[in-house]
Image 1 (cartoon, rainbow, N blue to C red):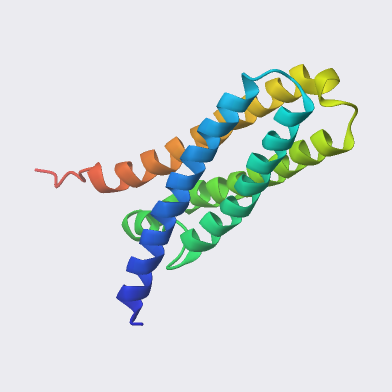
Image 2 (image 1 turned 135 degrees about the vertical axis):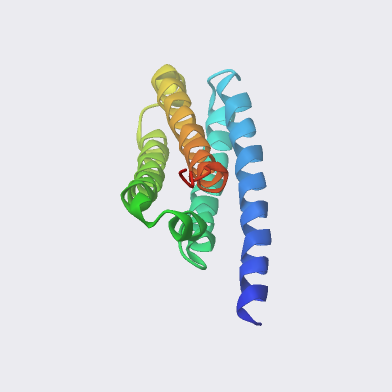
Length: 150
């Protein structure tokens, strides 16, 4: 595959990862509204496992051509923000793994459901905010007009 074909293929796969994440977040939101029983717990762990498989794939695909390379091509001085976003995504992944492990390792789910629900809701808000920030940075890079002066 040529370089442009690889980037195009990676972009398509990245879109699929993002769509899957969106579906999984919806499933997660729905599960958090279900009764706090062991069946819900099993489904919750399955959805978290799927997210924990999908997020590293998304990160890997974002690296093809460089993470937010299109932003850095336009504004190299934004590299600090790009690095911060990259680190934030990794931290969100680690946090989700910790939440998943705490569900599996703890007392009966019915006893921890309220805490888990709050933690996962907070994580989802942070994850969605992260994606919005990535999109906003890309949009800003291509929508800022540099003045030409008089």
